[in-house]
Length: 253
Image 1 (cartoon, rainbow, N blue to C red):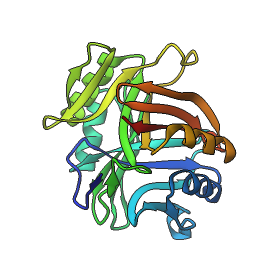
Image 2: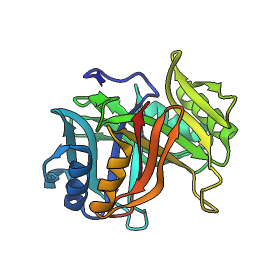
Image 3: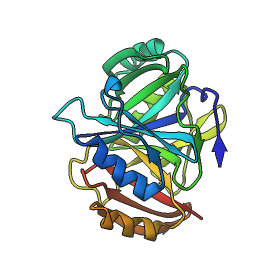
Protein backbone atom coordinates (compact mmCIF):
# COMPACT_ATOMS: atom_id res chain seq x y z
CA UNK A 1 0.00 0.00 0.00
CA UNK A 2 1.18 3.52 -0.82
CA UNK A 3 -0.36 6.62 0.78
CA UNK A 4 0.77 9.92 -0.70
CA UNK A 5 -0.22 13.53 -0.07
CA UNK A 6 2.55 15.23 -2.08
CA UNK A 7 2.55 15.90 -5.81
CA UNK A 8 3.42 12.86 -7.91
CA UNK A 9 6.59 12.94 -10.06
CA UNK A 10 5.99 14.28 -13.57
CA UNK A 11 4.62 11.64 -15.92
CA UNK A 12 3.26 9.37 -13.18
CA UNK A 13 -0.28 8.12 -13.72
CA UNK A 14 -1.78 9.91 -10.73
CA UNK A 15 -5.56 9.99 -11.15
CA UNK A 16 -8.47 8.28 -12.85
CA UNK A 17 -11.97 9.50 -13.37
CA UNK A 18 -15.11 8.24 -15.04
CA UNK A 19 -17.40 10.18 -17.37
CA UNK A 20 -20.93 8.74 -17.53
CA UNK A 21 -24.54 9.76 -18.08
CA UNK A 22 -25.75 8.84 -14.58
CA UNK A 23 -23.28 9.76 -11.84
CA UNK A 24 -25.43 8.44 -8.99
CA UNK A 25 -25.84 5.08 -10.73
CA UNK A 26 -22.07 4.85 -11.22
CA UNK A 27 -21.48 5.70 -7.56
CA UNK A 28 -23.76 2.84 -6.56
CA UNK A 29 -21.94 0.41 -8.85
CA UNK A 30 -18.38 1.24 -7.80
CA UNK A 31 -18.99 1.75 -4.09
CA UNK A 32 -20.51 -1.71 -3.98
CA UNK A 33 -17.77 -3.25 -6.12
CA UNK A 34 -14.64 -1.65 -4.62
CA UNK A 35 -15.78 -0.53 -1.17
CA UNK A 36 -15.43 3.15 -2.06
CA UNK A 37 -17.28 5.92 -0.29
CA UNK A 38 -18.72 8.79 -2.32
CA UNK A 39 -21.19 11.57 -1.87
CA UNK A 40 -23.53 12.72 -4.67
CA UNK A 41 -21.73 15.01 -7.09
CA UNK A 42 -21.50 18.70 -6.18
CA UNK A 43 -23.79 20.74 -8.48
CA UNK A 44 -21.26 23.58 -8.31
CA UNK A 45 -18.70 21.20 -9.87
CA UNK A 46 -21.09 19.92 -12.59
CA UNK A 47 -21.98 16.95 -10.43
CA UNK A 48 -18.40 15.66 -10.16
CA UNK A 49 -18.08 13.25 -7.22
CA UNK A 50 -14.90 12.34 -5.35
CA UNK A 51 -14.55 8.72 -4.26
CA UNK A 52 -12.52 7.69 -1.23
CA UNK A 53 -11.11 4.46 0.18
CA UNK A 54 -10.33 4.36 3.89
CA UNK A 55 -10.72 8.16 3.96
CA UNK A 56 -8.16 8.67 1.17
CA UNK A 57 -9.09 10.11 -2.23
CA UNK A 58 -8.95 7.40 -4.90
CA UNK A 59 -10.96 8.38 -8.03
CA UNK A 60 -13.56 10.72 -9.50
CA UNK A 61 -16.92 10.23 -11.22
CA UNK A 62 -18.56 12.96 -13.27
CA UNK A 63 -21.05 13.56 -16.09
CA UNK A 64 -20.14 13.20 -19.75
CA UNK A 65 -19.55 16.58 -21.37
CA UNK A 66 -19.76 15.19 -24.91
CA UNK A 67 -22.80 13.01 -25.74
CA UNK A 68 -20.81 11.47 -28.60
CA UNK A 69 -18.19 10.19 -26.18
CA UNK A 70 -18.84 6.72 -24.73
CA UNK A 71 -18.72 6.20 -20.96
CA UNK A 72 -15.01 6.19 -20.26
CA UNK A 73 -12.35 5.97 -17.56
CA UNK A 74 -9.57 8.51 -18.18
CA UNK A 75 -6.00 8.22 -16.89
CA UNK A 76 -4.30 11.47 -15.82
CA UNK A 77 -0.54 11.95 -15.84
CA UNK A 78 1.09 14.21 -13.26
CA UNK A 79 2.80 17.33 -14.62
CA UNK A 80 4.67 20.25 -13.12
CA UNK A 81 3.36 22.74 -15.70
CA UNK A 82 0.17 21.91 -17.60
CA UNK A 83 0.62 24.77 -20.07
CA UNK A 84 4.14 23.68 -21.00
CA UNK A 85 3.01 20.07 -21.46
CA UNK A 86 0.07 21.17 -23.62
CA UNK A 87 2.53 22.85 -25.97
CA UNK A 88 4.73 19.73 -26.03
CA UNK A 89 1.72 17.52 -26.83
CA UNK A 90 1.08 19.54 -30.00
CA UNK A 91 4.76 19.75 -30.95
CA UNK A 92 5.11 15.95 -30.61
CA UNK A 93 2.20 15.26 -32.98
CA UNK A 94 -0.66 14.95 -30.51
CA UNK A 95 -3.70 17.15 -30.04
CA UNK A 96 -4.97 19.14 -27.08
CA UNK A 97 -8.70 18.51 -26.70
CA UNK A 98 -9.13 20.68 -23.62
CA UNK A 99 -6.76 23.58 -23.08
CA UNK A 100 -5.24 23.91 -19.58
CA UNK A 101 -7.83 25.13 -17.09
CA UNK A 102 -7.86 25.71 -13.35
CA UNK A 103 -10.10 23.42 -11.29
CA UNK A 104 -10.95 25.72 -8.38
CA UNK A 105 -7.90 25.61 -6.11
CA UNK A 106 -7.46 21.86 -6.59
CA UNK A 107 -5.06 22.07 -9.54
CA UNK A 108 -4.81 22.67 -13.28
CA UNK A 109 -5.77 20.14 -15.92
CA UNK A 110 -5.82 19.53 -19.65
CA UNK A 111 -6.96 16.70 -21.91
CA UNK A 112 -4.91 15.45 -24.85
CA UNK A 113 -4.89 12.72 -27.43
CA UNK A 114 -1.67 11.06 -28.56
CA UNK A 115 -0.79 10.32 -32.22
CA UNK A 116 -2.11 6.74 -31.89
CA UNK A 117 -5.53 8.06 -30.85
CA UNK A 118 -5.48 7.42 -27.09
CA UNK A 119 -7.02 10.12 -24.88
CA UNK A 120 -5.35 11.04 -21.59
CA UNK A 121 -5.43 13.82 -19.03
CA UNK A 122 -2.69 15.82 -17.37
CA UNK A 123 -2.88 17.06 -13.80
CA UNK A 124 -0.83 19.85 -12.25
CA UNK A 125 -1.31 19.49 -8.50
CA UNK A 126 -2.67 22.31 -6.40
CA UNK A 127 -4.70 21.59 -3.28
CA UNK A 128 -5.35 18.09 -4.63
CA UNK A 129 -2.41 15.94 -5.71
CA UNK A 130 -4.35 13.08 -7.32
CA UNK A 131 -4.88 9.64 -5.86
CA UNK A 132 -3.87 9.55 -2.21
CA UNK A 133 -3.85 5.77 -1.95
CA UNK A 134 -2.64 3.19 -4.50
CA UNK A 135 -1.49 -0.45 -4.61
CA UNK A 136 -4.19 -1.60 -2.21
CA UNK A 137 -7.40 -3.59 -2.83
CA UNK A 138 -9.93 -1.05 -4.06
CA UNK A 139 -7.25 1.38 -5.30
CA UNK A 140 -5.44 2.08 -8.55
CA UNK A 141 -2.50 -0.27 -9.09
CA UNK A 142 -1.51 -0.05 -12.78
CA UNK A 143 -2.03 1.99 -15.94
CA UNK A 144 -1.07 1.15 -19.51
CA UNK A 145 -1.51 2.59 -22.98
CA UNK A 146 -2.60 0.09 -25.64
CA UNK A 147 -2.56 0.85 -29.36
CA UNK A 148 -1.60 -0.50 -32.75
CA UNK A 149 1.67 1.47 -32.77
CA UNK A 150 3.89 0.63 -29.81
CA UNK A 151 6.96 2.43 -31.13
CA UNK A 152 4.98 5.54 -32.04
CA UNK A 153 3.42 5.66 -28.58
CA UNK A 154 6.81 5.24 -26.89
CA UNK A 155 8.27 8.00 -29.02
CA UNK A 156 5.46 10.47 -28.23
CA UNK A 157 5.41 9.93 -24.47
CA UNK A 158 9.19 9.86 -24.29
CA UNK A 159 9.27 13.28 -25.95
CA UNK A 160 6.48 14.83 -23.87
CA UNK A 161 7.06 13.25 -20.46
CA UNK A 162 10.67 12.06 -20.65
CA UNK A 163 9.83 8.38 -20.23
CA UNK A 164 12.47 5.73 -20.74
CA UNK A 165 11.52 2.12 -21.39
CA UNK A 166 12.38 -1.48 -20.68
CA UNK A 167 11.12 -3.67 -23.54
CA UNK A 168 9.95 -7.10 -22.40
CA UNK A 169 11.24 -10.15 -24.25
CA UNK A 170 7.74 -11.60 -23.97
CA UNK A 171 6.33 -8.46 -25.69
CA UNK A 172 5.41 -6.54 -27.64
CA UNK A 173 5.23 -4.67 -24.34
CA UNK A 174 7.33 -1.98 -22.67
CA UNK A 175 7.54 -0.83 -19.08
CA UNK A 176 7.63 2.96 -18.83
CA UNK A 177 10.16 4.32 -16.37
CA UNK A 178 10.18 7.64 -14.55
CA UNK A 179 13.46 8.50 -12.91
CA UNK A 180 14.48 4.87 -13.14
CA UNK A 181 11.27 3.59 -11.49
CA UNK A 182 8.58 1.61 -13.33
CA UNK A 183 5.39 3.69 -13.59
CA UNK A 184 3.17 1.83 -16.06
CA UNK A 185 3.23 0.08 -19.41
CA UNK A 186 2.73 0.30 -23.16
CA UNK A 187 1.33 -2.57 -25.21
CA UNK A 188 -0.49 -3.49 -28.40
CA UNK A 189 -3.99 -4.79 -28.99
CA UNK A 190 -4.21 -8.52 -28.34
CA UNK A 191 -5.75 -11.02 -30.78
CA UNK A 192 -8.97 -10.98 -28.76
CA UNK A 193 -9.54 -7.26 -29.47
CA UNK A 194 -12.33 -6.49 -31.94
CA UNK A 195 -11.23 -5.07 -35.31
CA UNK A 196 -10.59 -1.32 -35.31
CA UNK A 197 -10.38 -1.19 -31.51
CA UNK A 198 -9.27 2.37 -30.73
CA UNK A 199 -6.09 3.12 -28.84
CA UNK A 200 -6.73 3.82 -25.16
CA UNK A 201 -5.31 4.01 -21.66
CA UNK A 202 -6.34 1.21 -19.30
CA UNK A 203 -6.72 1.60 -15.54
CA UNK A 204 -6.34 -1.43 -13.26
CA UNK A 205 -7.83 -1.53 -9.77
CA UNK A 206 -6.41 -4.04 -7.31
CA UNK A 207 -8.86 -6.51 -5.77
CA UNK A 208 -8.53 -9.16 -3.09
CA UNK A 209 -10.27 -11.80 -5.24
CA UNK A 210 -10.65 -11.38 -9.01
CA UNK A 211 -13.24 -14.14 -9.36
CA UNK A 212 -15.38 -12.66 -6.60
CA UNK A 213 -15.07 -9.22 -8.18
CA UNK A 214 -16.33 -10.50 -11.54
CA UNK A 215 -19.21 -12.27 -9.81
CA UNK A 216 -20.09 -8.95 -8.16
CA UNK A 217 -19.85 -7.14 -11.53
CA UNK A 218 -22.54 -9.44 -12.95
CA UNK A 219 -24.75 -9.02 -9.89
CA UNK A 220 -24.47 -5.24 -10.15
CA UNK A 221 -25.58 -5.24 -13.80
CA UNK A 222 -22.19 -5.06 -15.50
CA UNK A 223 -20.59 -7.48 -17.95
CA UNK A 224 -17.44 -9.57 -17.78
CA UNK A 225 -15.44 -8.86 -20.94
CA UNK A 226 -12.30 -10.91 -20.28
CA UNK A 227 -12.73 -13.64 -17.64
CA UNK A 228 -10.33 -14.10 -14.72
CA UNK A 229 -6.97 -15.31 -16.02
CA UNK A 230 -3.70 -16.05 -14.25
CA UNK A 231 -0.69 -14.04 -15.43
CA UNK A 232 2.86 -13.65 -14.10
CA UNK A 233 1.69 -10.44 -12.41
CA UNK A 234 -1.51 -11.73 -10.81
CA UNK A 235 -5.01 -12.87 -11.70
CA UNK A 236 -6.66 -10.27 -13.92
CA UNK A 237 -9.96 -9.66 -15.67
CA UNK A 238 -11.75 -6.89 -17.50
CA UNK A 239 -15.36 -5.80 -17.31
CA UNK A 240 -17.83 -3.13 -18.34
CA UNK A 241 -19.93 -1.41 -15.71
CA UNK A 242 -23.71 -1.04 -15.95
CA UNK A 243 -23.28 2.01 -18.23
CA UNK A 244 -20.71 0.41 -20.52
CA UNK A 245 -17.41 1.85 -19.23
CA UNK A 246 -14.54 -0.65 -19.43
CA UNK A 247 -12.13 -1.23 -16.56
CA UNK A 248 -9.63 -3.85 -15.40
CA UNK A 249 -8.98 -5.54 -12.07
CA UNK A 250 -6.02 -7.56 -10.84
CA UNK A 251 -5.43 -9.70 -7.79
CA UNK A 252 -1.80 -9.52 -6.76
CA UNK A 253 0.25 -12.67 -7.08
